[in-house]
Length: 366
Length: 274
Figure (cartoon, rainbow over the protein chains, first blue to last red):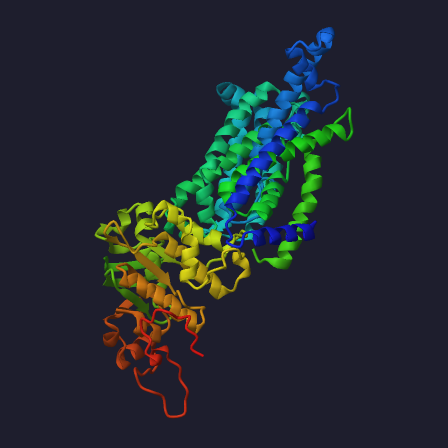
């Protein structure tokens, strides 16, 4: 795989001797939009029940009048199970991939990822606090926030960890990779320890909720979860779209970005908020799904280059497609049961991450 | 016009710059010279607002401290000492980053070609498709200069002069490209823009600068025309080392000076001398 990647990278650059990859970026976004559409159809037509979207569509046009009962059942499966799952999967995939990309831009480091550096653990701690303490210690908070309690707690957990990480790992605009990864491990471990205490004191029914939540799965998708997480994810993704020029400038360093006219402090704050929002809302509904944020941006950077104006939408589209594909695989591989989706993404992402490390060790002193 | 009055900078408890005052008019190249640790880069960083300072700096009559980032980016572009990039940008993409918020001053239709024009100006035509991480250090420095040129391509915009702040622009370049880059700076000034450049090479400063600011221990040790600043006594004192100006070494010792070819302000460096 490494050879093929290196080759495609070289040949793509050679195709454009002037080094302008913007046309390539636009084509890639178009193709990825088609891919996402295909993955949405795949997601809608894959599952334990034999429900098929074509029966439903046929039902709309009165083409299958003899199977009214089956149409009703399929209708329920499609609208109440598969459609919310597809929508949630696409949203979470886009959010995870984009928050990885934003962190990599913020830390000027291709290895930054909310899952790796403890941000997801912090968001998880927020979510677990609500599940375990939501009826006792944090009851006023849950009552006040209602539907959004889990999401907002996750967001705050992610926000706190990102801030701490940034303060620890970055000194006068420079981030040392070792410091960042080690600080991330420490912060993740701390969040994990507190989460462990909460799990220890949890009641049996809370434990059941925690297990469902923590599997890293889309299996519990429903419209309520979409109503709770969807707006936060949407806002974060829209905010991210306005960050792309600043992220490009930031690759030259904070001082140079400011010289180019980017309001660096405000920009970093907005980036951290978007990361925390996207990560928090995803973690709140789907637990820990790892590696999407590192695999997707890295693959796309190899193909279309690091210009965030194209990389950002492409990352959102491929992230959504990747998670829908992983979810379809997780439903098919041990059907009629299903694997937690986190296993699929980790099984693909772990080796991929090692490959990046090996390649960088050989070629670049990033 | 850039006016610096009573500028002082402290980092931590140590005061790096003491009461520095000078002015850099448009249409001129102002060279900053001085030994290591004399405060040259600190001065540059203060002029870029990277460091807090006491005193006043004004840019085109506006107090620098209250200038918006975008306005500052329109009036001056900054070449840093060294730049590494964490992601695999092509050379052209790096140059195009100069267009982030500044105004090149060109009509929209020409802005698309601007990165290529800027690359040609630093003798890197055809390098656009190369990866930034895979070219030499000297070439990277010239790519960064091309990026800086993109930001303020037209030296006078809306009747207001613009400035290039160059922190050691030629420190890792071969002699031909040193001359070529200094020619770019010279032409920028001749077209009405201003240039402030930190230089280590006293011969280049003598060749290209209209005014030289000599710093020692964070204080102004000399400020004026090259002939007035580059005197035996002053530069020996500034650099704490015996130096002679305009005296050939004892017979038989080779020495190499671009000035000797009589090519100040020469326009075409691609003439093959050999």
